[in-house]
Image 1 (spheres, helix red, strand yellow):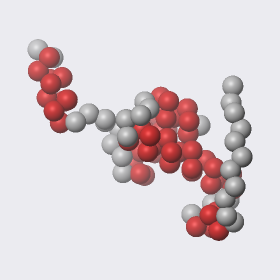
Image 2 (cartoon, rainbow, N blue to C red):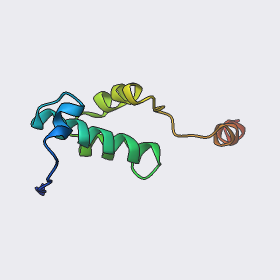
Image 3 (cartoon, rainbow, N blue to C red):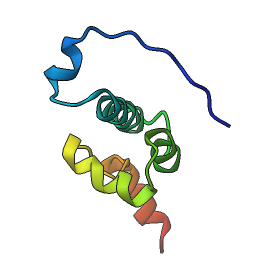
Length: 85
């Protein structure tokens, strides 16, 4: 199931990022998904679903936005490694 939303944007919005309306919508979905993932609000799987792409495509896309696919702090990694014995 999907829900359609109507969004009104100024005409200049499309030229600002050099995209046609369909490309703009796809880029906006991806940008929102990346940001929400970066903030820890959603998982990679959910982000990919929101962006309308596969999880592997989403992970690859993270580099464009300079976002790490790993959402662990250094302290969390150390704690997990301690428990790995």
